[in-house]
Length: 218
Ligand code: SAM
Image (cartoon, rainbow, N blue to C red; front, side):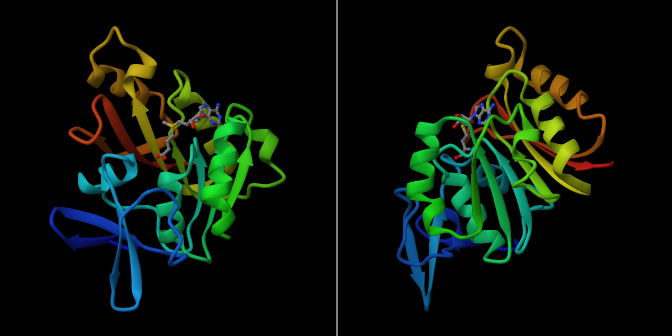
């Protein structure tokens, strides 16, 4: 897969080629093959890695892509996306907690020139209008009850026609009274402006979580 390397190690693993060799973003394992350094991408720590292990197809995040990432947290997944899109790609990484964002900037964004950290509330996409541009992929993982609506509003503002959405659905954050499959299906019904390509249950890597891959039809 473009920018994602499948390695035969002790356990079957995926990895990305480190954009900044010698610098780790968290406590990830690294491996040297010839002159390149690869960062092992743990599907138990990153939902995008879990989706790839569960046959995400197509992988919309490619070399040179621009990505709007909602819910950057401390940057585990963002760092691997940064490896994949490379120096000609861009990640606009939105995180509203200033404490978490500070850790993200110090550990990850400060070392990687393709990441633009945005300390903002994803519920107010107009607040980053002067920073963010039209982009290829929206990745949303903010684990909020109304996150699908928040994500759609971001897509309307920033996602290109035919661009891709990767939406993480943490069903427990949305409704604990319904079956997790039903909660996910109700969220997917809200994506009326999109063509749904894939719905991936992230079990066994994450319980009660899905990733939905969809294409924007605006
Ligand atoms: N995607 C991350 C990863 O794979 O490394 C994990 C994201 S974590 C589940 C959710 C993050 O979304 C938290 O860091 C939280 O502070 C952030 N968040 C929640 N609501 C937000 C909002 N309205 N705007 C921006 N960030 C938000």
